[in-house]
Image (cartoon, rainbow, N blue to C red; front, top):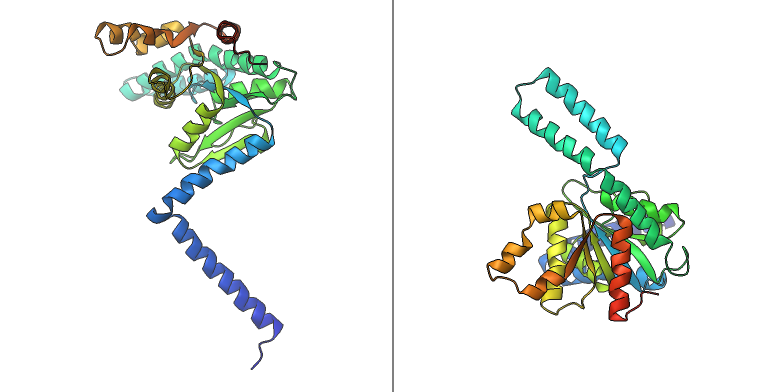
Length: 283
């Protein structure tokens, strides 16, 4: 008996739905992990090539460092809670942390200014040969993307799937906003085209990304690039690099892999100076 067009169409839709479900199960299986890694890499790689992104200036920093008004607003809310429960050790610690974030909010503005400097460099905002790249999230990442956006330049955001979902900030160029499943592939894209790394104060994620690159440069697995740590007092407090040398676990020359800066302009000038000295001009 011949099926009518409606029945045939329904059967076809059911077949497609069944295939899609089976395909998804396979793609997320252990056996298909290699395919997922390739897809995670290629989706960004093809788009970066398409848009003529030859080199990047990468910015790392805390997602929790917000602009001053937002940081102050959060502090006031915690103050009110603490005033209602002054014996709460938890609220006291939250209050102290919020106060420190207010103090560090100036680095949001410095990252924003740095984004402008990168965006205005080269042949102008339309030149993607050297493009700003961040982790795509809020805080310092948002600030850097925002600075590039404000001068009309494109910028890249490499977001990552997290248990607490991290949404891409609104200042990334839409066609250069990517969502990664694997940290390893995301890190590969951070390193692959990088011609400089600027690291603002941050936490575990920032430290993880920083030490990845320091190790790659130290071991010769990645070409040397300028690495600039913004805010010497912060970095000197959380990592005693000199102590590592004194303990014999790193070499003296390893201390030359990075340098410090206190603001966006100083960081940008350090990058230009490094490339001039090495005779590897950015533009």
